[in-house]
Length: 303
Image (cartoon, rainbow, N blue to C red; front, side):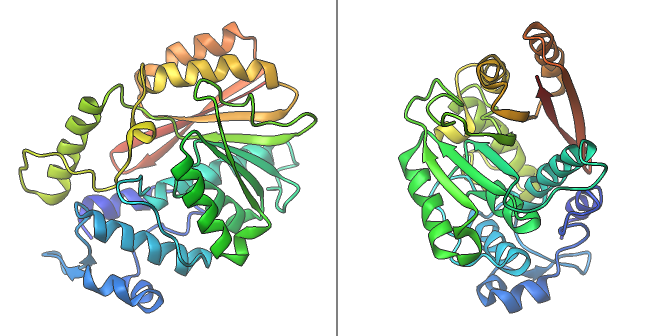
């Protein structure tokens, strides 16, 4: 594993199962196919080529099978293949938020209901949240292909069947409307918004990322973690997406205890805070999640 990736993983949440270096021997025992992608780097550590989409996807399959008991995890070609350690961090920090109003005890079990806005074909947040804490999830997406793929993952795994429901959002301009049913209550919402403003923006930034991971200069962008249009970019990028979600959350203030979203760019926080103050939330907070030199954050609010 490259030194910079190993360093990133040491900064993960204390309960994150993916801190430290990957145990490739154990992962290969769980999924022998992973051995086709494992090699020893110049530092003497086992690793994979993180710029290779097939290697990244196979690593994810092994991680989900080994740590969460999830088998037959598959996503359509070209769809987002999420980096699992960082996704797990989001879930664990959400557990900490819920503990703050539960005498410091993390609530577990199916009575804790979570809503994942933009669950994607990979269904990663419901998988981690249900397997780690037993929470119930509703995952939503505007893409029928993603809904079908996420449903297939749930259907193939007994450990997930009673804890995850996938719903199609028929109106791409809404987040909660058309999804939250009358008298339905959620403890929290999760969202990893599309943060690029255009396809060209996504391609340019992923080209830089791929070059850094591979150590080789390439001229053609390759999405090692995949991602289609609605997963990676939208008009106005993540800032507009989050602001619109905040505005719609007012209508569902009684239906959810905590609304949350990832925010990739720190410079967006001031505008988000102003919007939260404008809609008169009763409380909001920001939690930074460090992964080496990269710092992401989640913003949570409630009415």
